[in-house]
Length: 585
Image (cartoon, rainbow, N blue to C red; front, side, top):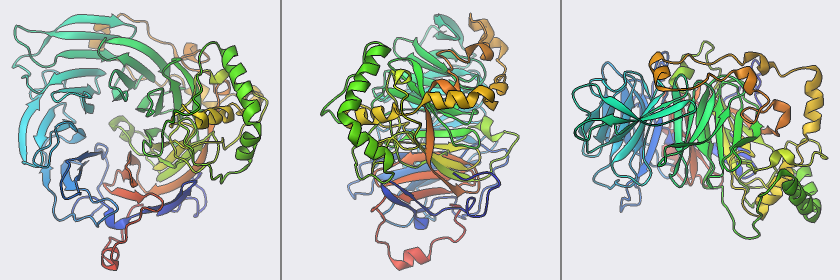
């Protein structure tokens, strides 16, 4: 991995990188940015974000891309690896005064070639509903900022709904809206609906139905990001207080929590099978949390700064149903299962551990080997005192080296695994990959953080995961404590109005360390980086996996397309010659 202040080769901006799947290549002709291609001065501005939607265009080119750069918002036809980007012809372009776009989301249910519904959140707290195809602005929510005056940190349509959407703010509040309802001309009055540890949910008291339908107050400090589970039933939230909180969205009940090693959590995502949640933040770690067991089962390291984006590659991560392996029961039962499984697969496991270039392509949700890019940072990340150093791709892997993907997830009961084998940088059967991005412009993909652990390949991967020895690490940390133990006090202050709504006891970070909320470093498997490549000068803010490519963006405002192995289009030499020379990555 690229070290800070390392040699020239280590800090060189890469235009391609090699994984077990093959070579990913930067397509300079497919770079999207502001039409003038001038790097954006990112000082004090909100992160560049990217949203995609497919409008099912009969021409076969139905992908559309939306991205924000400073005060500007662009909407283009996305041609990906097929054709060169034409920045001179945006479908829609908007420049805002007095506020900046911070995030956006398409409604995939209602999108057609003639109309799309795009939600845009702003730094002053408003949320706008626009149709960039019709070039219409249909509604503006929280227009007078009577609902919340703080920055919008995340906005998403509720899965399966054409009218409901959820918005989170830097105040630590989330609001549920219905596009069919108005927000009213006075500040809303609320009535308590449900209350629990460090959260409360209120309904809006009004004679007629109005927005917001619900107000969630979650944790302390900013609510940095949230993500719906693949089935849309659960909601994972990460906050500046360092907590991951997972809710049953419809029942409005807390399912489980997790605490960062220190500092705030900035990003979160679900594994494709919904069994694992991955979060990253100011502790420079990628934490894998089991949804079923409600506990941390692994951590990925290798980043030199805050982790700003985590993502699973859904296209290279698959869940096979043949030869399934159930992991249920006590830790002892799980260990017995793993020992028995290990006897059956001992030879293949050892061979995979010893071969970094295995040709086995069976995917494993927990053990990815796909490069991940630390890409997205939130506004609070952007206001950090130490500026980013450059964008890099790091692949964390604790599973085998197979031609698989880089999504990583973990299995329940991982802490009870046998520790007879030493820690290994490569675990067998890693087909899923998790990508992460950090504030130093270094992006990484984590092996063993984001695939599906549900088949025999996954089971093999888990057994490989079991080969990570906790014993070695305990000895190593006996004399020298992990330096991050001394930074536990970094928690943002809470808003006073929120304290009035919540009946809670403030969590003492020192008391959570060493518990199920926040295991010590030596108590859980540690995922090693698989690759680390610097791909941009400025911090990465976006990482999105598409079928034939992956898309990254940096704070300079350049959205880059990386063709998957074998997916580089046969473009004319004219297109190649006309590509810009000042490409960031």
